[in-house]
Amino acid sequence: MVVRVRVLIADDQRLFAQALRAALFEHDIDVVGIAEDGAETIRLVRELAPDVVVLDLAMPRATGFEVMEAMRAEGSRTRVAVLTGGESPGDRRRAAELGATAFLSKSQSLDEIVESVRLVGALSGIGRGAALSDG
Amino acid sequence: MEPQQHTAVLLDPHPLWLEAVQSVLTSLDIAVAGKATTAEEALEIIERDEPDIFLVETGLTGSVSGSSVVRAARQRVSSLRVIALASSSDPADIDAAFDAGALAYVVKTARPEDVAATIRQAFDHSIFLARVQAVGVSPTPEPERAVEDDEGAALTRREREILALVAEGHSNRELAKMLWVTEQTVKFHLSNIYRKLDVSNRTEASRWAHKHRLLSSAEAVPA
Image 1: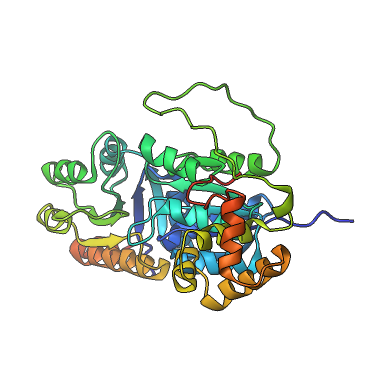
Image 2: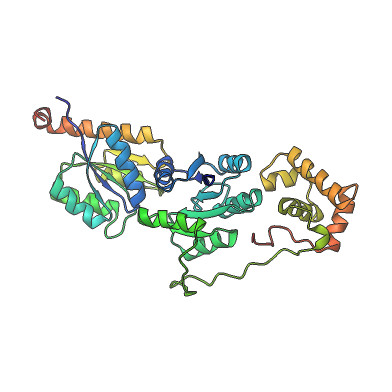
């Protein structure tokens, strides 16, 4: 059976988050939640245990990096796909060090973003082995 | 008769933002004439389609500032309603957008319904805010008006702008670059200016501009 990837979107730009949710849904990717700040993201990752969190870096109440630190400290198995609108020097390296699986830019095309999220979701499935194949 | 549908042009370097804004416009029954990820594309569409509204991310990176795009857009279509939809909430950026002629400035963290309300207000103004400045926001300066002159009333806004720049000594090539048009377009406008002012060359046209104290658009804020 086909297993749909479960995604949490973390972005304080609400309109953008809604558009991303619609785009992912059209491509058979489930969005299980939208978090509008870092603290809410940490809580929803814990509660919903999504396969992927699409994570903006610049958010109030905990930045994307702080979210990743918290996830690592809690031993979260949710994979991180950073999706940022403004990249600063060193962001990619820091994200990789904190365990991000992908680093995406909002200037990428919609198709590229969706495919990357799908790919990160597939990696999540590999990581969890039998749990996903059972649906 | 059905009222004519409003049209919009969108500019944002992030394609998904264009989709996001388009969904809001569709809900308001506003047709999207074009979507662009670069200033050049957006200005080309604006020049071609003369839309009613321009939604623009004014925090553009690269060689062109958001403010200059707003100015260039309004120079092409003087009736254009410009709404800045931007990531920055820095008062200096907000002031710069207003100075360039933006009607409203919406921070991208705004709720979708607030974005929709702002767009609706651009056409149907029914909400008026007190003249109270937000903390850290400097008062918006009164717009400086270009000199009006009966003799020059026949000139369009674009022609006045070109004439003012000619009077400042700019070449056609420089004008084309400054105004985002081809040299051919500049020549076309100049020939109309000569005809309307009944002059035969740029020297005489410049003399007319100096005599009538025509301001360049760099000094005159779009009305």
